[in-house]
Image (cartoon, rainbow, N blue to C red; front, top):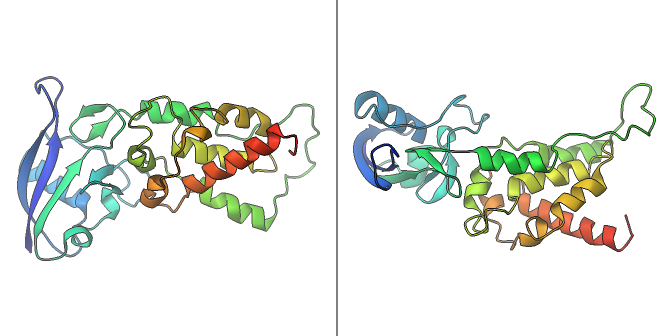
Length: 242
């Protein structure tokens, strides 16, 4: 067992004038996840520590936090992957660009409000006939869309985006990647509507192509690629090509 210093950004709005760091000492081994470390601290050192977690299998996305200045799923990140197996220090902070409720828990409301704004569901034109059996989608198109359907809404990309750090109105990488997913689905009839929602200065044209969102996504979604494709689709539509 190696020694680990865990520096956590703490903030209780009911008693703290400002966020501050507190450091705890724990032990870890090769298989210890960052989330396990938080369990140790809350269960045996300081029961007031507050954080989110649920599935512990990298599926729900609720345990996303900043660990050593990088957005990660704490249930899916081993301490040894960050600092090695011989001890050291890690810093755990809440996701950025979202209001802190307490300690490591943020208000995810703004993230979901923007996600909802792009209408993340299939929209059927009531004037078009419905297939007798099912909508058919090619294998190639399905494979392409699966990547953008893999988002678990953890908020890591939202936190990593420097544009959101200076512009609260920006839709953000997760919402835009999902907009691309539906704009590319042959079963959907609302492409023009979605391109109008995202094709503006708080949508695709606000992205500076920094790739932070793509780098931190735990599921391999590529929001930067999706945003660039939405830009192309927006221009093509204005030129009358589609």
